[in-house]
Length: 343
Image (cartoon, rainbow, N blue to C red; front, top):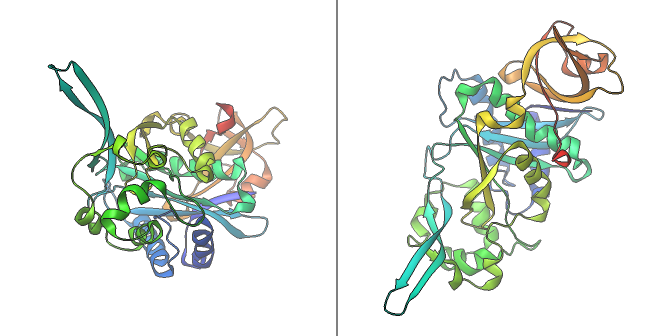
C-alpha cells in the first residue's frame, strides 16, 4: 500500500536518492544535500505557520511504500512563485510583419520573456522511484497535493500551474538550450539547470535576452522541442491534463518544456472532494477507488483504497483505518480517484 505524508528530516537520504535518479531537468529537486535539507526545513516551517493568504511558503511531501516502510517518491507545492525574484517563462506569441506595397502579411511566432506566473501557486518536484512508477502510485502522489490545497485554500492562489520537463538526452544536452540559452549563459544545460535549483535566480534576469526570439531563426531541431514533454514526464503530464490543466502558450526558458495551468476550483479532484466520517465496512467488488485524507497540516496523510460512500460518511475497510491511523467516526476527506487512462 502507498501513503503520502509531509517530508521530514529523516527522509533526506531518500530524497537525495530520488534527486539523483530524476536527473537533469528537475530544478526543484536538485541533487544537493544542503538544498534538499533546506527544502524540508522550509516545508516544516510552512506547515507550522498560521497562514491567512499565500506567500513564500513551500510544502514537500513523500510517497511511502508502507509494506517496506520506504520512501519511494516525492512532490511539492509552492504557495506563490516570484516572491523573492521574478519567475521567468517564455510566452509564445506572434509578431506581425506586413508590407502593403509588396502585399505581404506574415505572422511570425516568437518567444517573449515574461513573468506572467508571478504570484501564482505551482505544483513542483514530482519524482517516483523507477520500481514504483505505476499509475496508482503516481496518481496518488500527484493528486494528494490537490486534496491538501482543497483543505487549506487560504494557503494558495486561485490559479495553479505546473512546469513539465522538456526535451533533453541522458547526457544533458537540450536542443533548445544549445540553440539559445548557452549563448547567453556561457555554460552547458546541465550546469545552468543545477544552478537554477541551488542558487538565487537573479542571474537569469541578468543574462537572458530581453528582446523577442523569432522562432524561425532557431535551428529546426530546437524549434521542434518547443512545448514538447520529455518522455519520462508523459505519465505525470497525463494525470494533470486529466485533472483539467491546459497548455496556455508558456514554456520553460531553459528546455522549452510546456507549462500547464488551471483555475484551482475547477480541478476534478477538488470539485469532487467531500468531508465526513470514516465508517467501517467491507467494500463490495463494485466499490470504486478513492483518495482518502486525514490529519491536520503536519499530520496530513493520504492513501488510496476501495471505499463506498454512505449517507453518514465514507465506508472503508479495517486495513485502510490502520493505514491512516484513524478510528471509526474520525473526520476524513475523500475524492473519487480518476486515473489518466479514464480520459
